[in-house]
Image (cartoon, rainbow, N blue to C red; front, side):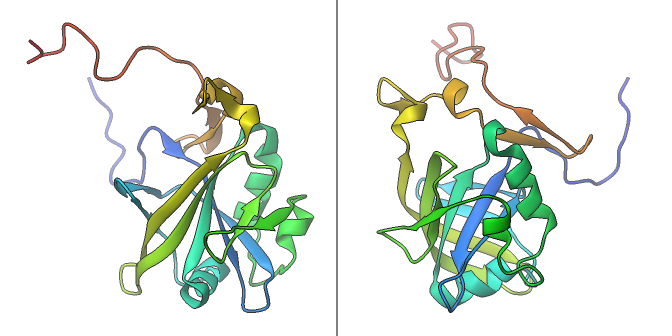
Length: 187
């Protein structure tokens, strides 16, 4: 038997993305966003309300970064999701984050978050409040790599549980993708 919950924005997993931008004076802003995902090989999309400081910034600079929120930075990542850059312009510093300028796009990289996508704005639809970005680079700190690849057990990325309003950590491998010998249709 199933229980209906109605139309709600609930999927599993929902990565917790940290979107970084600079304002017109070079002041960094970071917001916490869960309504987003990969659109194609080099594209990422988000639903972001036009009232966010982040949206005003990325429309001016044409760039943003997307870092994966981590367990080690849970409090800071949650904080920047609750506080508006329109009201607290130094929220990045108050969160305890430090930034360095991306060498590829006009946006900040949060040094405490070890994985980042550097993106150019492809479009922002005012009516539907949908941002589409071109991924120009992905980088990760060596501390979260194993054999040259990002290791989720080291990164410890946060996942948002919209049903229970909690954060989870995605770390445990349970199988290899595209490899199950008994998959339907696999010959």
